[in-house]
Image (cartoon, rainbow, N blue to C red):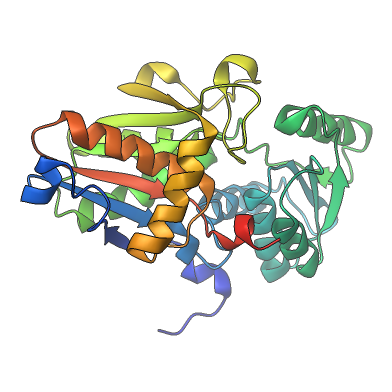
Length: 300
């Protein structure tokens, strides 16, 4: 397949059936319940964030908000930063990404190798501190920056409405019954969930979050103690599952050892939730979204 630019390879990621994990559940073993992982590390930037980053940048160029004399500025926990840096480089734009210093070394290196600048926020304020600092930089130099504002930009969920949801519906042969994704900005679960609900109102849309503000699930938000993204609307969900860190870490390791899927800890969290759902339903097709690759967690 020939592309004129790397950004044309964003999307159309594989849907992979989980065949070994869950065999102790009778519904899974019999085939009445099937679990699939939407493998988003197959995007060129290595994560699901390529989709909204591209859409937000494209829309800003169309509207004239992003011009060649401005830098792309936003807060990030890492993956969106990699996407901004990669897409910015491909389109000829500089990027400055604001993040807490505890973001994985792998993500930092990927951002820097694409020529982007990293500005660090307070290590004690997490992703919320990065949001506040990015907004401060924008207010101080509005002529210098364009800020997509991934937490509040409607093009974030729209990217998933137009792509991720369509792909899942198509690749499950219109049989998906449950969709599960972690909450970071909320864009993935909101946009994908809306599209699947438009196809079939009976599809259950389930969000996954850490069960505490002090957690180790990088990229996910504990909503009760965080700045709630403007694009996140909890009333649209059918369910929200709160999980501790350790089971998600353990499940990430199981996915690698038993399925050959080297995914990150937020993917492990989505799979733990899928496992819980599989235990309580009689039949169905569960799709858990796996946002990124395990190399961004295990290989610093």
